[in-house]
Image 1 (cartoon, rainbow, N blue to C red):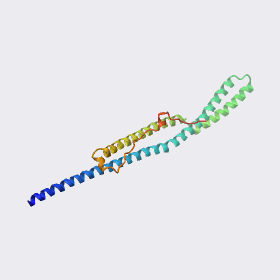
Image 2: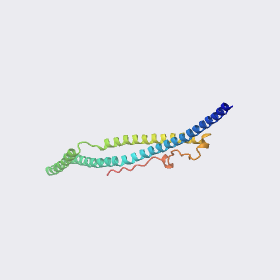
Image 3: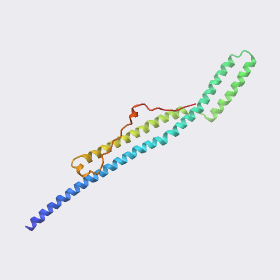
Image 4: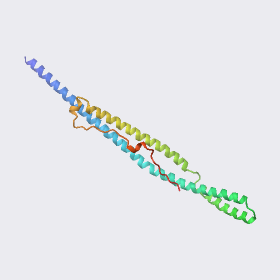
Length: 192
């Protein structure tokens, strides 16, 4: 009789312990999934910060190089016009004046060539395009990871019987695009 009582109480205790550990597992998984959601959202924010930190210096470099290169291209255009003018000179004085002007423009072009041996704005712009693509892919991946973590968390806390034990957890919202996101982004790169 005493052995039966011990077995019954042992069985009840084992059942209670199984329930307690089961409940703990459900609750602890909800905590872990919620932390995954928070971490994933932090990664989304990190990628947006990366974009914010990366783009302005690159744009400034492109604009600076393009402004310098526009000076070179203007000088080249002036030199072409002077060459044409010199070839059409009708007297020695016009030819001498055109040659002097051409020499001055040529000297300024040599100065640009010495200081800026390569035109760089096109390479900088191509690099910027690669940076944009890579950054936007990272942002998209981070948002997808966040949405997957939200789905996992929301599913866990809303399933029965989990929902009875995870009532203190609030459902999370997945990442949604702004209503303006369907429109093409506007760019404003001004080169003078």
